[in-house]
Length: 209
Length: 53
Image (cartoon, rainbow over all chains, first blue to last red; front, side):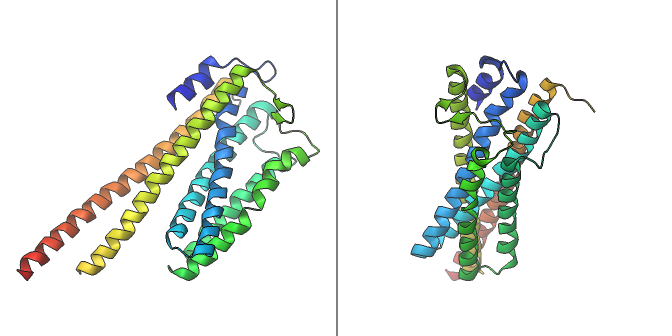
């Protein structure tokens, strides 16, 4: 993370068009990609739960979606700051990319409402899994919205011709993406371990009392 | 309120840092609670084992 910060804030050359505000790209895009990845992982775990019926996938799906929601919130906040720097507004409803990501984020926020409105057990696990699978359909729509949109307000950096940036900028982006992915992986493992330990201790307490 | 480009870049990175910090603090608080619960259960298990012998 330290190397990524140094590269993003000091080493990477300043963008000729956007100036210093382009440096938000190195944190905003990796966080957005990580959010998509976490939501996708949550859906895969949900599918495995429905397919194999193993209880552990419910917790793994929940933790992945929780991580995705945190990174999703960060995507919206950093994107809003970048919008203020580039477009002069904190938010614009005319950009499909922004609105679709907000829809995706709110959809997964509702996942927690559904989950915590049901009693713990197989029914809650199955209902949550089905909901998580529905949400995954929004990911490609949100991701491709920028290419389908006609407003062109949101910049397109990765095209069929490759990344539209210099080699050092692309290398900085890759390091930042790796760092954010690694951070998400560590947070995922720690949260999952904590929740499993919590469940084990609850079970142990019931046995001992 | 007008924000300079530098302030906005600092705000974007600062928000991410703040979120991660809060997340780590929540996890740390949870670990402290789990540590306390584990100690309580060990004590309970010892008492039970003592009572059984």
